[in-house]
Length: 113
Image 1: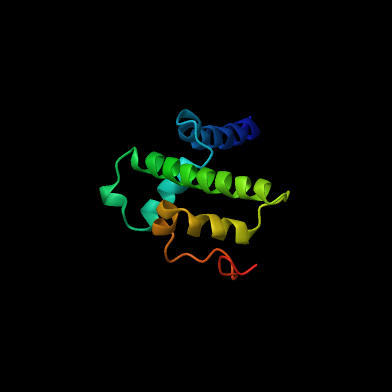
Image 2 (image 1 turned 45 degrees about the horizontal axis):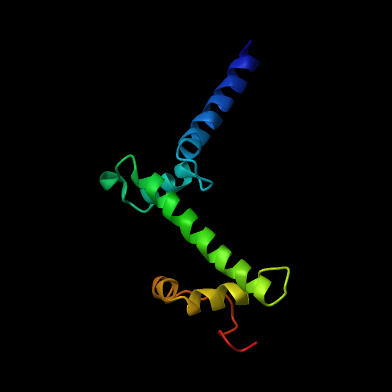
């Protein structure tokens, strides 16, 4: 009997964790974003939709960067996306380069291959 309760509790916790992410139809974990926001001391100013919005934005940016890097890999007849390709895509796109201005993806500067 006690074995059922402990298993039930953990599965309940899992379903609760996945529920917000699944409801928002996201891949990135909403609960993880909420934990990061609370650890960053934004807790008193958080609304219920803030971690959902943050997860959606990060998922969109990741998908966009990987889409552009995949296109670049196809154009150069390669089967894999390398960090150099991601770096090149970020620096060649004006919107992404402004956002990732201080980010170094790889140690190879764009255009030095």
